[in-house]
Length: 169
Ligand SMILES: [Zn+2]
Image (cartoon, rainbow, N blue to C red; front, side, top):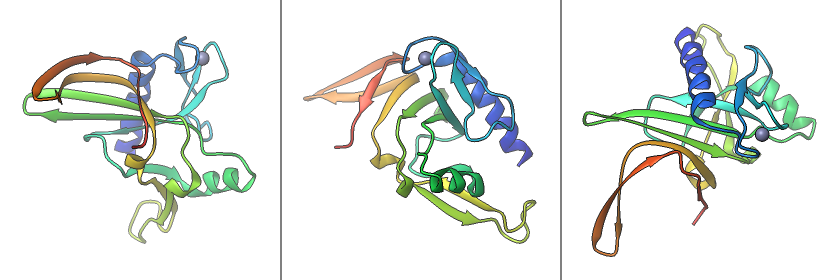
């Protein structure tokens, strides 16, 4: 958990360094540790988001947070905070990073689970984000090489912070 926490803080600092506000383009800033639900906010508008950092390729299931507070928020009729998912991994000898912005995460994409009796926070209810591969997102940062094909020609692009909207197909 201590490692996750540290990982999280580093991830938040990366996000505010690499990603401008998806709404107005101004700089994002971190919120104080322990601030409920949100990790970053915009210095220029009311944009706020949760940040989750993973040392892996982009994937469909990632760790969320404590279920209690999220459940209360949802039960009060609020919606899940927007999510900035920060993925970092090594491919061959290349360091890669992709930050995805999910403007809306429906309730059904949160799945609660209970920590085991042996966990530090025994029997604590957490949630995961699930089926992220089925949700539309903005790619707000990419570092590394991308290979894709146009017709029969292989193309390699060097990306650096393009805003691609990847909709559900
Ligand atoms: Zn803004």
